[in-house]
Length: 522
Image (cartoon, rainbow, N blue to C red):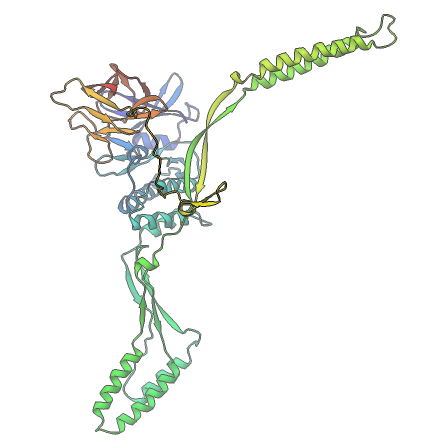
C-alpha cells in the first residue's frame, strides 16, 4: 500500500490511493466525508488527474509505531487502547461502516499527543479480516509490553490466548477488558443449624441426601488476572460429625447444670464447622505462561532476474536449431551425401558447446544478481536461551568443562602493541551556541523532541514538537526522518516531508523548526 504524507499551511495529511474506480463513491466514503465520527481519522476524498486520493488529517497526532519504538506499554495503556479500539469499531457499525475496512497496523493507528486517545484509519475497500488484524496487533503489543508490569503481562497474554481460540469474536475481548474488581462469593448451604435436635436431624437428612462426591466447596474469585486467590473449604467427616453432635446436644439440653460444658461444646462445634481456608498468595498462583517470543526482521536475498532465464532458454533453443539446420542442409554429411561425416559432426558440436558456454557464463554472471529484502519471522523460547547461557560448554580438544562467565588468571598477560582507538562519536553542533547546547548522538535510532519521556534529547523550545525528528543509522549511512512535526524539519534548507527518510551526510545542515545545527563526527 503506497502512503504519502503532505503538509499545507495548517494541517498534516496521510494520503492513500483509492483502490476502487474514482467515479464510484461508496456510502462509507460519503459518510466519512460529511460526518465526523469520534475515534476515526477525518477523511477527505480528492480527485487529482483522474486519480482518487484519501486525505487523512493527522495534525497533532502520532502513530503507535513511532510512539512505542523505544517506549513500552503499561497495564493502563493496554487496557485503555484496546477498549477504545473495540468501542470505535462497535460504534462504526451504527453508521453502516464495514469493520474489515479498518487498518489496525501500528503505522496507521494514531494517538493524540496529550491524552493518547486512539484514532483508526478507515480505508474503503481494504477488506482484511478484523480478527486477524487484531491478533497481529496483539502480537505487536506483546513485543512492546513492559515485562516488569505483571498486570500488563497477564492482560496481554490473556488477550493473545483469547485471539487464538476457535470462534474468537470481538465481544470476547470486551469480556476480558471489562472485568470488575476482585470480589469473593461463597457457595454455601442455605440451611441454618438450630439448637434443638429435631432441626439438626432435618439438617443431617438434607446433607445425607446431597451428592457425596462433593468433598469440598470452592470460593470463586473474580477480578484482575494477577489476583487469583483459590480458597478450598473442607467438610471433614460431615455425616459422622453431625450425628455425634446431635446425640451430644440432646444430652446437654436434658440437664440445666451443664451450661459450661454446653458453652465449650458450642465453641468446639463452631471451630469444627468453620471452613478451613487455604489461601494461596497471588505471587504463588499467578504465574506468567511461557510464550514463544516473536522476532521479526529483514533478510537480504540474492536472485537473478527473469531475463536471465529467458536468455538461457533462447541460447539453448538456438543451439538446437543450428544442429537441426546442419542435418537438414546435409552440411555434416560426406561429399557424396550418403552418410554422416563424423569429423564435421564433432566439429559442429564442439563449436556449439563453446558458444553456449560463453553465452551462459555471461548470462549467469554473479554481477547481474539482484538483491531484495524479505521479512523473516522467528519464534524463540526465552527459557531455553537462558538455560543454554547458564550451561557450561566442553572443550573438545582438552575435554575440560568451561564456563562462559569464568575468568582465568593469566601468567603472561597480553602486551598492547598500539593504543586503543577511541570509538567515533557523532553530534549536532548548534549555530547559536549561546542559547542551545551540542546534541550528542549516542545511539540509534535517536529521537529529538520537546517531551521529556521516550526521546533521547529534549529540545526545549516552543517551536519544537513533542516528537519532532529521529536520526537512524544503516551500516555506515545516516538518515533523518521528520515525525509529523508542526514546524517541519529541514536538511540543507530543503524541507523533509513527513515520515520521509533522507540521507544525512557528515557536515550537513539540519534545522528543527527554526533551530539550526550541523551534523559532525568526532
